[in-house]
Image (tube, rainbow, N blue to C red; front, top):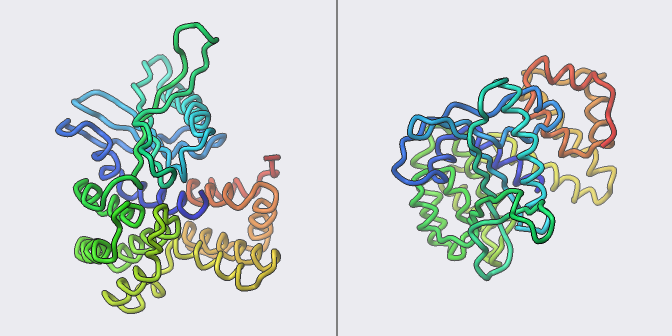
Length: 313
C-alpha cells in the first residue's frame, strides 16, 4: 500500500493503546505491553504489526494488517504473518505457551456491498475438518464518521476521509477535533498528513483532498510545510517524481526521501557508502522494503543492515 501503509504503521506505533482499545471487546481491562520484537524480525520486518497485550490479566497478542482492499491474497498474507509471528513468540519465551493471537484486517477500500466480518484461510484437505486460520475484518471505509469518532481517539479520526458519509462539513469537524486534541504542532501535522494520505484513497468518490488542505491551512497556515514527517515526505517525493515526468526523476525523489528518513532515524545524513547502499537496495528490493528497514531498525542495527550483502527479493 506504499504511503498509506507506512503512515498508518507510524501512527499505530505512536498510539498502540488507541489501536488496541477499538479492537478489543468493550469493557475488558487492557494493558499494552509493547510491540513484538524478536530475532525473527530480521527475516520478516512487518511483525511490528503485532502488539503484546494483557487482557483481564492474561497475555494476548493482537496482529493488525492494514489492507488497501480485501483482495484474494489477504488471507494468504495473514496466514503467512501468523507463521512468522508464532515463531517469534516461541523464540522469545522457549518452553512457555504461546499467547493466544487475534488477527484483524483493517480494510481501507473495496466494494460498496458490506464486507464479511470475518475471513479465513483454509489449509486442510477438501472434505476434512477445518484447519488454517480465521481473522476479523474491520472495513473502516464502510463506517460513518460518527462511528469512527465514537472510537474515542485521534488515531481513528484519520480514517474519516474513507467514511461513506465523509462530507466537507463532517471533515471540518474532524479537523477541528484533531486541532484541539493534538498536543504539539508536529503531532497535528502528523495527523493532518495521515488525513491527506487517506483522502487520496477516496473509496466513495468524495474527492475531499483539496478541501481538507484548505481546512488545515485555515486552522494553522503553513503547518504542513513547516513540519516534514513521514507521510508528507512520501507525498512530496511522489509529486516531485510525477512533475519530472521521468522514471529517473522518480527514482531520485525516492532516493532523497529514503535519505531523509535515515537522517530522522539516526540524527545525521547518510555517508556516501550508506547512501549508495540505500539506492542499490531500493532498486534491488523495492523502496518499500528499504522504508520498512528505515522505520523498524534502530541505530547500529540499521547501519549493520546497510553494510550487509543485498539478498535477492
